[in-house]
Length: 80
Image (cartoon, rainbow, N blue to C red; front, side):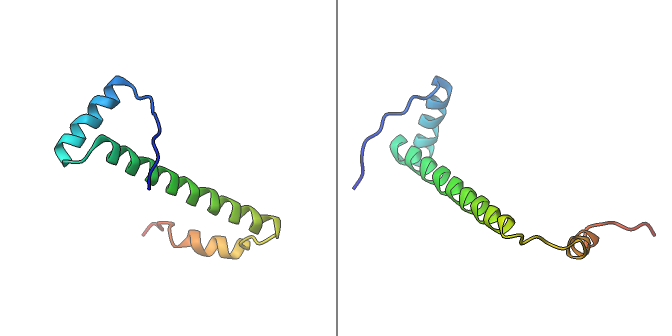
């Protein structure tokens, strides 16, 4: 089941979408729906991760200075 939604695009973006649809043998609607789905999933994930991090911070769950230094020490290049 799907529903219809109207989206306004800049002329250049609409033309690019048309070319992509032709090159991939997909409809513009299919490509637009896929792009929106991926955008929503990515942003939902980011919001979940931010909310989880805020809950950890509110609970005082921070890395110790020693833990931070251990991780950073793996990335520091020491001169020979």
